[in-house]
Figure (spheres, one colour):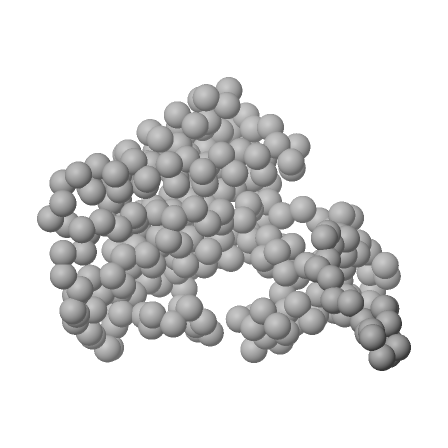
Length: 263
């Protein structure tokens, strides 16, 4: 505090230069360990304020675990979905000239393999499958609102896009074809079509989190970079950006694998 001209004490307001790391699980930690959400009411899942309050109160750790800290909790076997690229496409309505750069399954697998090869690893097996996975039941007519409380799923066999049996590492790339093949029957139709691959990847990760596979898994998605469909030069730029965004997803996954001691 300082005294002003009249002798009154005045409190100075100064910005905080650095924040100490909290001793409770922060919201990002909860996102990376969604199994902790099983301790909370389902109505809280899509409310960051309530989740943050639960973190601060230690509710996610549970009374039966005493003073357990985040560093001693069980590590997840499924990496976070690393958000590089919007991963959402919208067609129809009043949108004119909209186009998106996207990968075929083969193109994505080749890029992902190149990233693992550059890091000194191979992940070429495409025969590995996980049984009874809760797979998102997708729809082209889901709400554009980012807060959705109900996501239907179907229980099915998931054929991984890549796997290394020696290291027990696998991944799934959520593509335009996956979204189409996983779609559900819709009772409501619209002239606007929405394909949200990022959300689909996050929902798939939730389903994989419930499986005991003894495998470290990653879920990637097509960034779906937007450009004006009538501009050829823009399409080249968008394709390069799409490539860069997927590379970032894979590199973050490789970094996560190393942090888990899987590589």
